[in-house]
Picture 1 (spheres, rainbow, N blue to C red):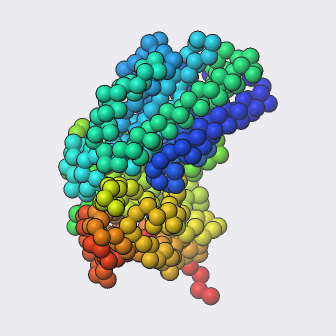
Picture 2 (cartoon, rainbow, N blue to C red):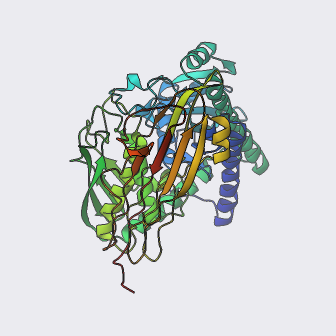
Picture 3 (cartoon, one colour):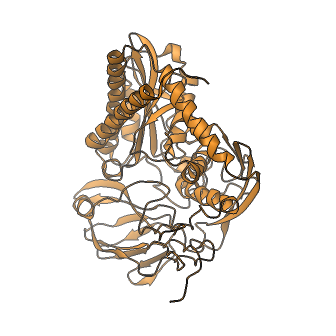
Length: 519
């Protein structure tokens, strides 16, 4: 689509739009209640046009939400058409199949009006501290065990709260104050986008954002197409194995990528079928992390909007674990989605071998803890990281969160909020794969239960069987280890930790790049 704005105007307006969504993200960060939002930054804020097309995403946002939030908003608009929306409406859902991929991630959207005209949609996603159900249990067999399902509903209608829905949510979660506080923070963040956009349009005398949307999306799409043109046409393939929660078995991502001129077609046909565990990723989430991986390698600096995805088509057969049918369990969809990034890297390594890093110590590793503390329930999740794979020209970064960008909660906050002590947090020496460039190190975390009550812990661990693979002759990184009171244990099961128990997690290092040169 052609646009008429000059480059200077585009840059000025684009910078202002980013500031609007960044202010919203800061609002969500500062007024949220849970550590998973406030400290881990597991959220995203976005401005979309009235059709649900992504325009601008906050700088500090989870990569997958670049793709999933617009999908959710477009589903919202099918349920509540744009012409029926009113000021003060707030729409909510956590349906995995229309967006973020698992129940803990709530999506909220509000219509943005200027001079009584719908000019956009403000959206936010955040990971709730709890959503009920059998919390992150690795043996969940369907979504009904995983928690409260919220269909597409209005949380507010014309400014009036849906008290019934608020009551249902509060009744079904373990830490209601944290969850409700984070929901209100998300609404506040969307309202910040609303007020910021209204102010921008008034300041520049604009009636809507259609002009700047067209310009930015068009420029982003053109940039991505130019990058794709630089890759030799052809069909490239890879196979990426994944641990299951039954460590005697495995899953497989089969990836075939076709490069045709300025387009990429990715097909996951041949991947493992969906399974009776939470290791399933809905198609939208699979697409989001696959497109993100392509963006990382080809055009990492372009804007985060619909334009970068337009030249890319991602497909997976219905019923495979990258496109499961309802009511599959999907709680561990991040594990699968993060491996999609590896699968894309492994495939593109055949086409552009001098640009693709070794495998990283992914996926993200989370401790989910729940129990009682001083007579009150607690339920939280916090994250630690393995090492990044080495890349052409550089060692991998140690303990880097990739492909997601959530943060590690400070030890002091964990020990204040939970009946635990972090007895050790250190690098796992020599865990990075050797090579011309060495993989980043994983980390060792020792968690001791200090309270008087039993603590329930779930890890959903990975890389116990398949280490992060090296690239171009580099060696593999170390596998993950789980140690309870000095004994190696099977990781993928819930733990009942008694007072004084010490649980140790040694995370994998990244793979090495290039053959090591003897000194």
